[in-house]
Length: 171
Image 1 (tube, helix red, strand yellow):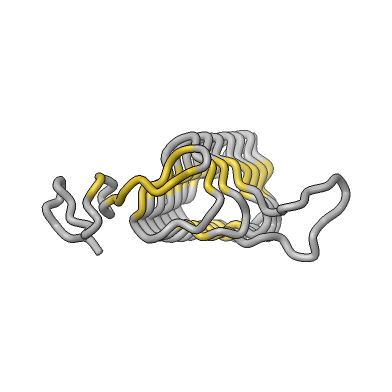
Image 2 (cartoon, one colour):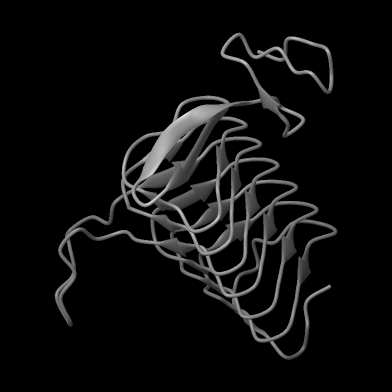
């Protein structure tokens, strides 16, 4: 379902994907199957969103952003793609930012361009992420710092990735 109150130019949108009201999706953006793009989201041309991704309201996905399968982007998360932004001056290449499979980014976080956020990692709400995040790591704060580990199910776990909730090692 694509809301008639959105401006969607892309034809590269998968099955069972919902794009709610007041979204703008540019022509070359690619969005996978079974995604949920909430209200007031802007998606630029060089953006790839894989299957089963949720993007909450108020997010802008700029050129160079890659969201892998099963990613969650909380409301008002901010991405950057240019270290030296100036009006009417554009870099020859925008920074590439990859959010790996199953990762979650909490509301109002800022993600500096050019980094990778690892598989099933978790970024706490309001964090400012300035460096690469490893697989299943928990980071939060301003600037975000490593605070522990999370299971693929989303619960905190120890450094061996053994989850008290699942009682499994989910490496």
